[in-house]
Length: 320
Figure 1 (cartoon, rainbow, N blue to C red):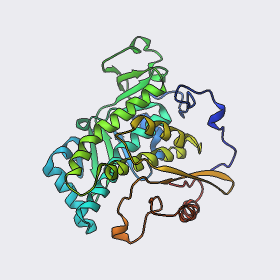
Figure 2: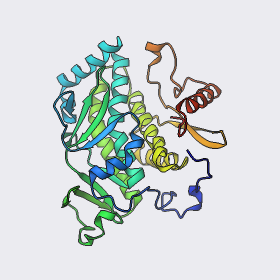
Figure 3: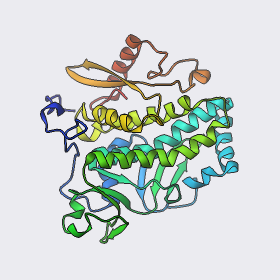
Figure 4: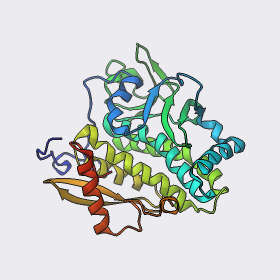
C-alpha cells in the first residue's frame, strides 16, 4: 500500500453531519447490484456476497427462516457442539458471525458506492460453513436505495421523487427502493435496514442465553465497526471508515449500544485505526486468551498485538 499522505477529510466540504459530502469511491458507472458487489469485494474480508438466489441449496438458509425457533435452535446447536461451547458462548459467536454476514456488505456498499441494499430477511440467504459460522450472503433481488446523484439515475430524473420500488432494466438491473436526498438520509436508511433485520434475531437470542442486550448488540456493533474500518482496503483512506462509523453509531443509538471505540497509532509512518470492543465476545472461555479487540486487554498490549498483526499481513495490512 502506498504511504503517500492521504487527502484528509477535514479539508473537504462537509454536510450537516460534519462528514465530507462525497466520500464514495466510485466507478464512472455502477449499473446494478452485481457490479456494486464487485466494487466492494475487497472490503468483505474472508466473506463473499452475491447478486441473485443461492447457486445451490447446499448449506444455504434464507434469513427469515432463522426467526423460526426450531431452525434457530438447530443453528445454535451446530455452533455449540462444534466448539464444545456453553449456551452463552454459542449465542455470542452466532450473533457476531451472523451480524458480520449481514452488515458487512451493507456497510461496504454504503461507504464505497453510496448505495444501501434491502435487508428484508425474506430476500436474503446466508451460507453456513462447517462449525456454524456464515461465509456468504446472497441478495435475491437487486433492491437498492440510491442517492439522487447516483449514476444509475442520470437518465431517469423522473424517478428522483419515487416513493415506491422502480426497476431500472439492463443486464445488471436495479430495483430502486428509495431515492435519498443526501448522504445523511441514506445513512438513516442503512441504520434502519440493519436494525430492522437484526432486532428480531437479537430478541430471539436473548431468551436462549444469559446475555443482556448490551452484550448482544455489542457483538453487532463490533462487527459494524470492523466493516467500516475494512473499507480502507478499497478506499485507501485511513480516516473515512472511522468517521463514517462515528456518524453511523450516532444515528443507531440507543438501540445499537456498546459501540466500539478507536485506538489510533502510527506504524511505519502511517496512521492506523484499531478497535476496542464495547463488550466481550466470550472467546476467552474457549481459548483462554482475550481477543485483541477485547475491552479487557490493556491499551499497550492491544497496540503491540496490532502492530504485529499489520506486519504479518504484509503490504496493505490493516489494524482489523
